[in-house]
Length: 269
Ligand SMILES: C[S@@+](CC[C@H](N)C(=O)[O-])C[C@H]1O[C@@H](n2cnc3c(N)ncnc32)[C@H](O)[C@@H]1O
Picture 1 (cartoon, protein in one colour):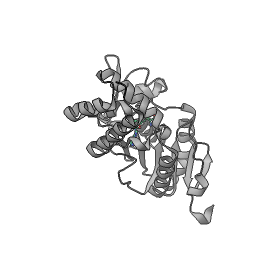
Picture 2 (cartoon, rainbow, N blue to C red):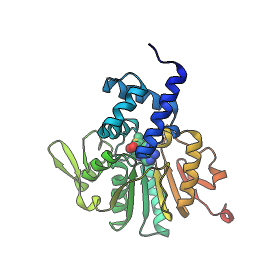
Picture 3 (cartoon, helix red, strand yellow):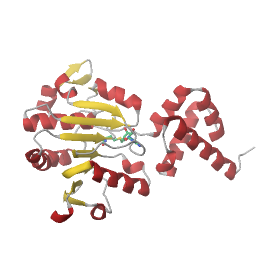
Picture 4 (tube, rainbow, N blue to C red):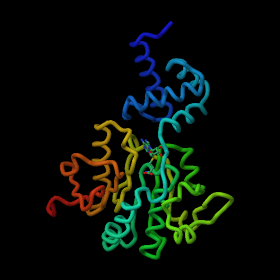
């Protein structure tokens, strides 16, 4: 017998509550349709046909819970994603920040398998000749962080890395490109949920790119406001090339270039 609509909604609510209490993952802060589509794909793979059945399976099998979360959070990434934006980061934004803070403190929030923080580490090494900058890279997805720490990439994932940098900062192992130790040592990977965990402050640069696309508008505004408070005065937030902060001025940001938002103290605006 087909389940009634209120029954489905109730089961969905229970599933949401389970994921929230078991591992702090809040389905409710993500766009509902996207999450439902991904849940349905995951259910199909597990051979279950209802949220209630999925919930039973998750209660019995803790590994299935982690697997589900890995599939609900999309991890697509690449080195120097949108190379023209990374070029602006290298030639305009980093020199400005480095004049003020020669030893940069940067946070890659939603770093996936590490291509983003390692790209930044390579840029900082190139621009300053030093590797004593601090880069924190966080993600909600534990499994992807393990991959990030290994630092091994396919030729597709490094396709935007210019050949001189590829030779200088990667070793080739079988068909993979492995990030050099020196670049790895610049990045600390840590699990962190942007929707629930506290933020450190005093950041000079925050990258949060292609993460909020799945968040509700309310969750986005809250997140951008928290980033604003986590930045040092004059610090910059770098977002994805299809994203925009609609209420940037109201939050307190000015935008020196599209996709870059600076925390500008009131008296300087
Ligand atoms: C599409 S990837 C973007 C990776 C990289 N920033 C880029 O632009 O290439 C999105 C990442 O956000 C992470 N993510 C999703 N929800 C999150 C949350 N609440 N807290 C932290 N990371 C989250 C996912 O696990 C995924 O690795």
